[in-house]
Length: 436
Image 1 (cartoon, helix red, strand yellow):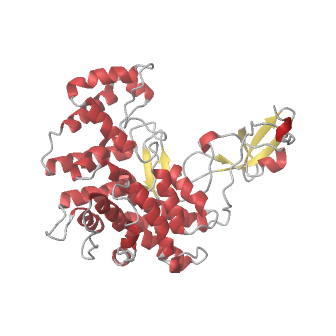
Image 2 (image 1 turned 90 degrees about the vertical axis):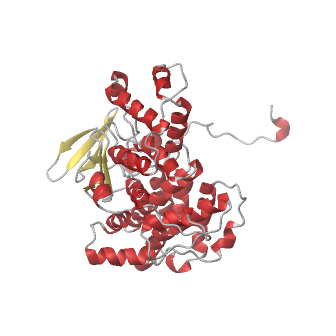
């Protein structure tokens, strides 16, 4: 296909054998152009073939922009580093939902509404008792978030803008409460009710690590780190889980069901489990003096070992989130007295090698956010089983913003990918006595 300028628009030409067709070409605010092939089948009788949809734009969106080659991530036009360094998570939530940063009055009102929705229905406590005590927290989250639609009937009408916004606020507010409950349930401790006088991140840490018999005050350095982690994971364009939420939402499913679908997708180790894999790899290496051995193995095509936490499917440059996550990691380890953590020393040496070794530079294997986040979360006291839960907690606002945008898009249709069929052609049924 080649794009050429017309009188008022650009068109792309597709030629197959002696036939050709023209399709509109659209320009975004920034980023590559797209060729509208929505009428390809109707006009040519053919589909495109794009496993993983990596060359397919499934929607029009104003929320998040990624330039993987330049290492850029923008939320509504704002660079991720500016938001993480200067704002807080709820301000980012407002930005993703409404499109602009809030004024002081808007911020106060939004914070109030989220804070007053953090409690979950009391019957949810009994719902947890149906899970085995050793159930994985992500299994618990998938079930509990999906079950919210059974408790909040007054915000499941997706045709009502007010109900859509109420559901959005509820999801952002209740996700940390459910995540903390999932954690408490797995370790056998009582649930801690949220406190309205605490900020979002401090409240979450309180519900996770507080107990009724002692007073608990979240360390401000750890609370700030938690808040920053939430911002860094809030949205990431049309990734697998976001696309799952949009696909589920395209059927008219209620928002709680759509978010549960996103959580289930995120649970996959190729998506949300990358920081866990990176932490396990650092533990396997163990010490700085063993790094050369593992670097040699990583370069050996015949060795199954792979360096986890390096490179990214989208970013072909340094992951912009990784720089902030590295700084956050240092702050957390310094605050809790683990500045000389051997895992961090291994991580820093691996990072140095990755940024200077020709092999890593040529392959563009730069450290990504998962490289540092696993160490940070472990130092804060979270078990590995909770890592993806925290990812889901942060990503909920992105899922909700994307879902809300999709519902309000007049051009949105129910998702229905096509296929290249390579099975048996039509054949006739034979009685079992005549089969060989």
